[in-house]
Amino acid sequence: MHSYRYKTEALIIGSGIAGSACALTLADAGIQVTLLTADDAPDKGNSALAQGGIVYKAHDENPRDLEEDIYTAGWRINNPRAVRFLARKGPEAVRSVLVEKLDVAFARDPDGELELIREGGHGKPRIAHCADYSGRAIMDRMVEAVRKHPNITLLTGRTAIDLLTSHHHANSLEFKYHLVNQCCGAYVFNQELNQVETVLADYTILATGGIGQVYLHTTNTASSIGSGMVMASRAKAKTINAEYVQFHPTALFHRAPRRFLISEAVRGAGARLLNDKGEAFMSRYDPRADLAPRDIVTRAIQEEMLATGADCVYLDAANYVSRDIHAYFPTICKKCSEIGVDVTREPIPVVPAAHYFCGGVLTDTRARTTLSRLYAVGECACTGVHGANRLASTSLLEGLLWGVSAAHDIASRHSHKNALPKRLAESMPDWVAAGDTENEDPALIAQDWATIRSTMWNYVGITRTTQRLKRAFDDMRNLYRHLQDFYRETPISRPLVDLFHGCYAAYIVTLASMRNKESKGCHYRK
Image (cartoon, rainbow, N blue to C red):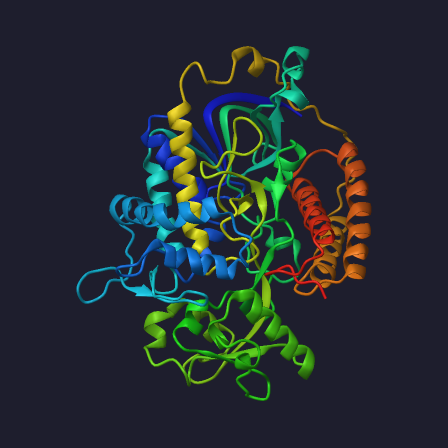
């Protein structure tokens, strides 16, 4: 297999809100950026699927009010520095980047001010939105700006395989003797040319998104397999809080490879959850009822389903939402009508689904990881903002703010003195094909994915026990060993890389869940 080498000042792996915000801010600072996506377009990730909106600030709000809501949702194991950073710096990032620079068409009130709504876990209306397609509206403007910027090279169909580091890859012992391990770029699979590219970079930024696709039911897109966390972990960067996988309580109940999300904003507008007997049940589980944080609502739904033997519960907007449902939730109405549900007349069948990863690669407020020259932003990173459970609509804000923060830190450090040393770059070897046995079988790969997803859903899902976790650990460890052998013998391909990353991500989550004996937030042990 042929290999191709090139050098860039900043390599960003992932093109959602975090990766794109980082790319645009770096490019505006005059830094040459290479932005990679495994998909055929930069807006195919989870960011474009976000419905509810992005946290801004309530009228006359003290940032401490938002901090308190974040702490309450996160079970107070949040990182105080990160929470303070988000609450104080977040609104300015929304205003300067999304409102002023990109002119995102957020909903406005009659006075022309941003229309702010409230979601579960929030004490006040503080969420800016574009009906129920906020993520799509933001990403449309971001992608347009990315494509136009002369300092950004956007490469599609590129799957990152592994990070390049001085300790693991340098041909010269000189760099292995250094105490500090440095990230030097990544090996990247070019799907169109079927070849591995050696991409060298002064700075590498992971922005690969979440891990939802390692679960049987998820709201996440196909590329959400934990690849960023896996590559960072293999390069010996620290990961943290991997046991905290948030399940969204209300995903549309129908057959599909990805569950369609029914936004929390629907409950924020007054909709109520009903069991299959037509009873509103949330007040039995929490005094906040349908506006309780997601982890509580998810477990309540699961308990109701187990108690009644039902396959789903129902979200009734028709009888409880006073505002114009079609005007506020056009995307949801359209999707429901496709499966024969009229939201204005009947309740929506819903089930929980894996939604958001609160853990990931440990970073500070500048998005720096424990590996020199490596940054992580967005869902693949763990800033500590979310603690044990994410507060609604903080994810887009975290991705935006840390994307900008990473870019500012890189721009402040960037100079010829801080560039990747020429001799270190030259010591990085090209990819060597591990094997040439053509034994990749789609049926085997499909079966391995089925094993991963069923194991994670049943044993490392909403409710966990010691026995379930031990079983999952044994299964994931054995599959990972098998895949390592397979990986060594078989020519590289995207399906194989994805499977390897997905299996290792599942293993990391399972191991973290086993080690944490305390039930908090979305890590619930019975």
